[in-house]
Amino acid sequence: ITQTIRQVQEIMARLGFESVDGPEVEDQWHNFEALAIPAAHPARDPLDNFYLAVARGADPLLLRSQTSTVQIRVMEGRRPPLRIVSLGRVYRPDEIDDTHHIMFHQMEGLMVGPDVTMASLKSVLRLFAAAYLGEDVHVRFRPSFFPFTEPSVEFDVQRGDSWLELGGAGMVDPNVLKAVGYDPDEVSGFAFGLGIARFCMMRHGIKNIRHFYSNDVRFLRQF
Image (cartoon, rainbow, N blue to C red; front, side, top):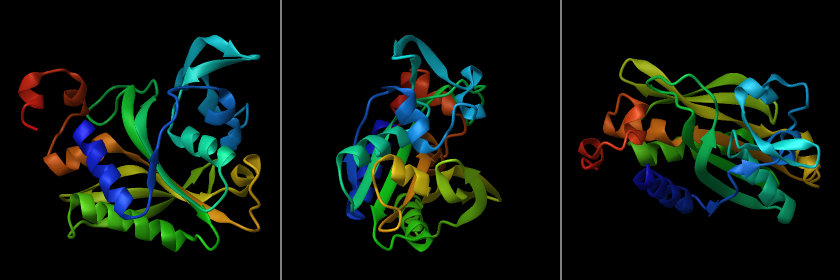
C-alpha cells in the first residue's frame, strides 16, 4: 500500500497535483455539512460511521469516512486555482469481504479554477489509469449520485471480462463551493475519490484485500 501511494503521488505530481494531508479524526462540519450532507442524510447514520465518545461542541467526533474532508480544509485556507490530491486511511463499518474492509486507503483529488469541466475530470482519470495500469487499460464512466458533486459518475476499469468500480467522481456541487467562500459563478471544479487498494490489487493480481492488513510476511516480501 505504501509503495502504491508513493507511485500514485508521483503520477499525480506529473499531472500538476500537489499532495496534501489532513486529520483522520474529524468533526462533522468537515466530514458532512460542508460536503452538502445534511443531518438527516443516511450517510450520517451511526451504523455507517465510527463515532467517538469525544465531542466538539454538541457533536461527537468521528473517524473520517472519506478523504473529501481534506479538500474542505484546503479550500477554507486557500483561494483558487487549486490542484490537490490527498491519500490516506478512511474508516467505514462495512462487512469485510474480498474487496471491502472497515479501514482502507483512498485518494481524493480536487481541481478548482475557471473553466474546469467534466472533460477535464475524465481526461485526468484516463491519464492516471493509463499511467498506473498501462496504456491498454479500458475505463468507463457511469452516471451516479453523490451529495457533494453534480453531475456525479462512477469510475470503472475493466478487469478481464468484468468491470471493477474504483471510485466516484463528479463536478463539485455549487453548495460545497459556497460553504468554503468560493463563488460558483466564477470558478468550477471536479473531485474524485478512488480506492488505493483496488488499484494495487489490479496491478499485482491480488484477489483479497485482507492480505494487505494480515501482517503475513510471506505476502509482503513479494513486493
